Image (cartoon, rainbow, N blue to C red):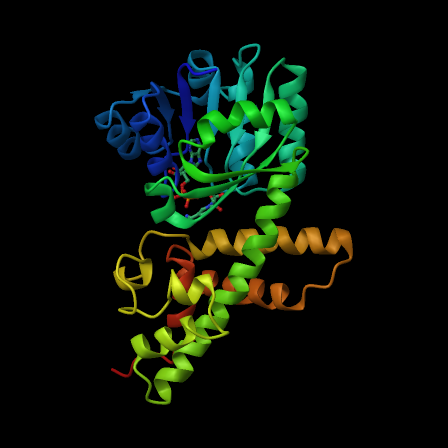
Length: 299
Ligand code: NAD
C-alpha cells in the first residue's frame, strides 16, 4: 500500500507513534485539537491538517489514537469527521482503547463508504511507543490485518490478529484489567514493605526474582526512585493517566456485566481508580496508586 499516512491524536502515545512512521520514511499529515502538539509534529516533518476531514481527503491510510469512545465517534462521524471525506479503499486503523461495540459501529460505516476499518489497540506504555516496541491487538478481516501490519509494525514489535473487528479491544480490555489490578497490588506491597523498614530498591529486586514479579513491579515500579525513566520517578507525569485506566476498567466491567463473567478484583480496582480520579489523580500516571494509598505527609 505505502503512500501518505494520516495521523489523528498526537498525545502521550500518538506523538511517539507518529514520529516512528516519519522515521520509517512515510509522509505524514496530522491533526490534533491541540496546536502545540501539531506544531511539534510539524517540526518533525509532518504536514498539518485543519480537521479529520482534511486528513482523510489527503491520505488513504489513517491512524487514530484518541482518549475514549466519544472522541473516536466525534473524529470519525462529525460534520468535519473522517467519514465526511473518506476515499474509496482507505484503510482506517484505530489504536485507541474504546468500547468494542463502537469499533464495530465504525467498521460498519467504513464498509458502507467503501473503506476498511480495523481496531488495533496497543499495550506497552509511552516508552514502548517511543521505542517502537508496542504490541498491537488487531480486530478485522485477514486482508485488512495484513494491510494494517505494514504500518503497525513500524510502531511496534508485535502485531497480533485477534479475530473480527472488536476482538482487538476485547484482548486489550482483558490485559488492562489485569494490569490495573497488579498495579494496585504492587503499590500496596511496596508501601507495606517500606513501613516494615525494607529499602524499596531491595524489595523490588526481591519481588522481581520471586513469584510476586509482574510488569508493574519490574518495568513500571510505582515507588519513586526504584526505576529511572518511569512516571513514578517523574512526579507521576506523562505515562498512562489514571482517568484513562478508570475508563478501561469501566469498559471491562461493562463487558463482564454483558457476559455475566464474575470479575471481583477488576470491579474493586475500577472503584479505586475512580476514587483516585475524583481526588485529583486523574491526570497523573496510574502508578500514583502508590501515593494515593499512603497517608498524607504531615506538615
Ligand atoms: P492522551 O490524552 O495523551 O492523547 C490523546 C490525544 O487526542 C490528545 O492529544 C488530544 O488532544 C487528542 N484529541 C482528543 N480529542 C480530539 C479530537 N476530537 N480531535 C483530534 N484530537 C483529539 O492519551 P494517550 O495516553 O496518548 O492515550 C490514547 C489512547 O491509547 C487511549 O485510548 C488510551 O487508553 C490508550 N493507551 C494509552 C497508553 C499509555 O500508556 N498512555 C497505553 C496503551 C493504550
